[in-house]
View 1 (cartoon, rainbow, N blue to C red):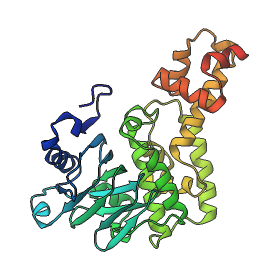
View 2 (cartoon, rainbow, N blue to C red):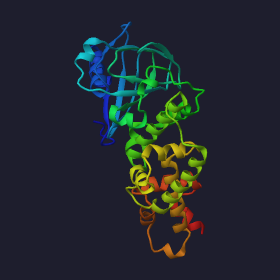
View 3 (tube, helix red, strand yellow):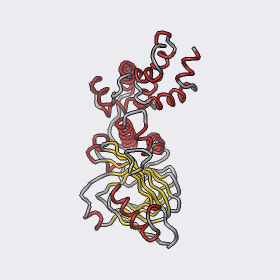
View 4 (spheres, helix red, strand yellow):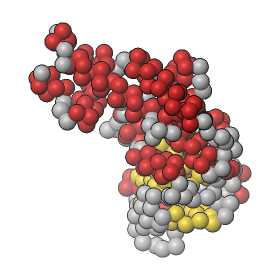
Length: 319
């Protein structure tokens, strides 16, 4: 466990001797991702790491290190009691994947992998990947037919695949646990972008443009009214609007927005009005942040500075 941030599981080959590193790393990826073997074509020094944080039905992992080949063959599939999907975003050197066909992943490419099928992943020196491990039940609420995306490089000229890769590339186990937004909203954002990518590549029908515009306004109004609720999430908003969570995210994504983005913006605007009001001078900065919907004073300060260029104290003094 990473002592610097409770909730993160961390493995590093630096923790064991050189002779044990390959087996140690194979155990790490097998326990955190899915059972597989790890092989090397060279005998030089080997270093690798895995970091992981769980968000319910979704887990965020980052891996990287020396060149190796990760193989999931019949023997590993036979010993697996778990079925899972893995969205993999390549953040480093190009690599080759055989999974229901062969593809080459350059930096910025993504692929969806199914643990029911074998794979052979050839990773180069200093590779770096972000994995989003998905439960089948959760994924199918967003993408009823995941096979549509399976084993193919998600094209970078696809609007929604590009947005998906950009979002996942910014995710890390640390961000998943320290974000000012609930982890469920971060997970739902991945799901909504996967759904839109699947649609763009030939999946389900989207909302009609006129319906999207009207629904977007209703979502914005609802967020503005309820943004101060600390535990507000997509399910609560969707229920109050009498729509599905997937429809909520699609309506926003059609306008290049995310629920997390508009929720943070609404909370920042609410906090700014309070900081600019003399009637609120009796409240401490921490109390202002909490009343605006921020449960963490540090996140409140960083988010306000990012949005307005000044921290909460400076915004209050500016008045």
